[in-house]
Length: 374
Image 1 (cartoon, helix red, strand yellow):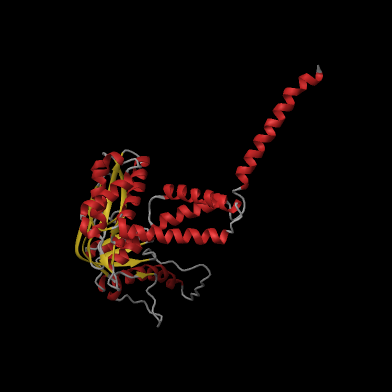
Image 2: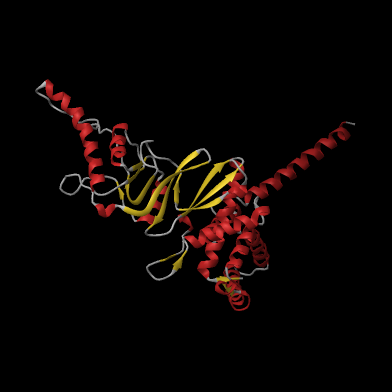
């Protein structure tokens, strides 16, 4: 009776061991630097960086290749021979696509680009509004067309800024001509619009200068102590005067701007924007030709600011989008810049729209630059 009673327990133990072994076999393939999960993740990242879409399909195809390669290895075919065969097949497949399936984009027109964008969106949240968003995507990519130094036509989609604003429906999203900064003027007394903008990009504070820790000042006359804070305030004033004298009427900085400094910009009728993201600064530099300045110090120990460091645009305007103020740089001189203003009910919807548009933008860019469509 005791033996019969123990039989179910022994069976359960064996089943548990089998289940554990199955889990171990799955986890085992993920261990080490060549774990299969790491290989597939790297392949997905490579596909996203090269094309911008199709990562899921790419991983499925890669997994099938691994499965077929594993069968060949079991038949004692050397991995080097398998890799050589895959490479030969790749060349032949590319050759067949180019000769038989590919069509030049110029022959198909804008409609083919819209279809490419719609195909990319077909598996996304905005698939039902793909007609609307596909037109937005194609217009945005075509707006940033440029020719590089080698005479090649490029479409730098990083020049397309995407801003997300709560409220309204997704179909209320629109394309804004100009690069939009998700921040407003530093003071209300500044003008809302500056024409023929000359833009300075700074990477330091425009606040009251303070002596650094460890600096010692020896004073023999107590009355001289009052001149120290006065000189600290004058240093910031002199820097702003150098900016304005060089012709700058729009100042962007990644740091803060003190209240005293704002007064000088208001009096000069200039726009100052503080705490601008460095990523936005980089795109503003490419679009306007402005140079980032981290210090005014020159080789002789003096502080100077040359007008050659300025960037240029037709106008800089502050606009209100939803509940936020946005500073838009329009008519940039070096390269074109546009912004996609996305509307949606909540952060989840806006994030999904942004992800879908990123993939669609990448696909349209890739199609235009390759000049071929399959």
